[in-house]
Amino acid sequence: MSYDRNVNYLNQRYIIYRTLPIEPATVEYEWGRYYENGTYECYELFRSRAKINTYKSLKWHLLVLWYLNPSMELNDFEHLAQVIAEPKNGFTTFTISKDSLIKIIYSVNMCDLEKPPNNRLRKVIFYVDCYLTVEEKLKIVGALVGRTKRIHVDDIYDSMLYINDRKEKITINKLAKHLKCSDRTIYRTIGEELKKEKEILNNDL
Image (tube, rainbow, N blue to C red):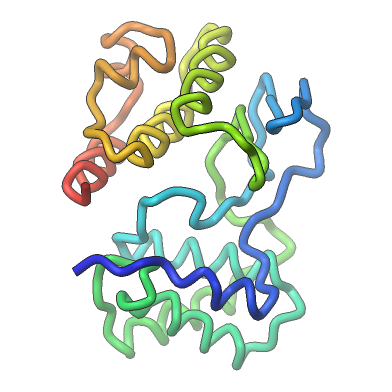
């Protein structure tokens, strides 16, 4: 059974789970920002329909939440981790044992919060209150990213999420169309990790 994501829990407690880059954008629009060389500073958890589906992804999400909320007490973070890890709250697709979650919490707590968590490269960032439809966003991503000489794996991932948000099956041809490149470029760039993610997203439709 699929559950709706309980972001109200985060909002009611003023937990930060999205933040814009500090570095200036190449171009800033009324709908968002464009970074020609990309930026790693944008953290936007739960921005798409895709849910947490692996232990690795769960740990990364918790690490980002811990990083973005430095004043949070450990007890509060432990409770937050329990909420995120409970499938009925709509953040994850799997059940994790209590002992495994405790190990993840301990591991996250031991991380150096002076160092930003690993993040995907982003070139196009839409504001949270952006008025554009998913279709319009896809067109913008394709137009802006298509200007560059090389398609990055994270450009493909962004397009995958937007296609998934439209509740459509992700295909190589659709990715190539939206990124204004050839199917061969997508095949050459996508990698095994994104191939698995593509199947997971398609199976969750």
